[in-house]
Length: 334
Ligand code: UGA
Ligand code: MN
Image (cartoon, rainbow, N blue to C red):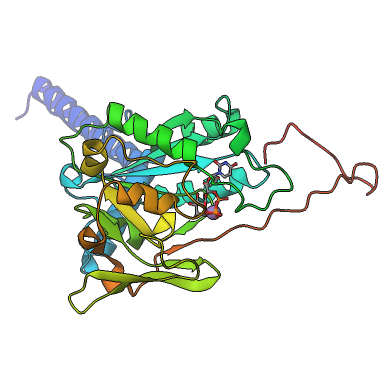
């Protein structure tokens, strides 16, 4: 026969057991509600330290890597340390088109690994427009300014070919490289004007430049494209160009890249206001190589990966008071 005491102990145990079960079920339900969606981030993520935006970006990178791997493309972001850096030197000047051009090319440059943008403003001081654009670009960059001397400035009515452009700015960038670049680290220098159009293949072609590499340029010199002509040994023999093929290097500024070491070893190599019209490219190239040294890229110079585009200057009329509702607002940056 059971004593009243043992009945009490049994029912107490039963109550404790049932309470525990209810507690566990409730805890389980709560955890399930709060659990992260599978696939968004892994359990090991420190969800407090990583913002949801960076988590989503990380997931996107993962998906892109997977896509590249599926298509047999080596992940371009692997072994970043061993990839030579590409220094792109861009002279730029204030005009209505400037922000549009810089936005376009900077967003291309974002897709290039190991990329360092040296942007040089043709101005007395650095402008807020370029300063802010660079700060928000997500790129590694160096911001300089070097104003073209008065006597070499294009006047409003001058045809654009009358005076060379970008001379002082590119020289300032070369000086910066000579003072700041690490000569032990592999790097390639490319002159990227702010109005051209660059394909991503171009940067991978130039990255392996030993001395100077060359390739075709589209929509330049009044022809569909210009290119180096190769001989039967694959060496540059001549130039197919719309203008002055007798130039020592009859090639546009966008058609070549130089190994940084060559520019450091030849400190006299620079651009010059004294060079004849169209001889800026020949001036810098003749200072570092001979035609024999040139390395043809872009499938033996048969592919066009860069275009010498020139954006039409917009016609901006002062319509204030002429069109009903037209607001002139200089506080908006365009
Ligand atoms: C061609 C070449 O592609 C240029 O690389 C070369 O500098 C130029 O000719 C030349 O012979 O001097 P083009 O399209 O006519 O180019 O030149 P722009 O694009 O008008 O200027 C080249 C670069 O210099 C651009 O990045 C531009 O923003 C900059 N620039 C232009 C200045 O910094 N200041 C100016 O007053 C004008
Ligand atoms: Mn141009």
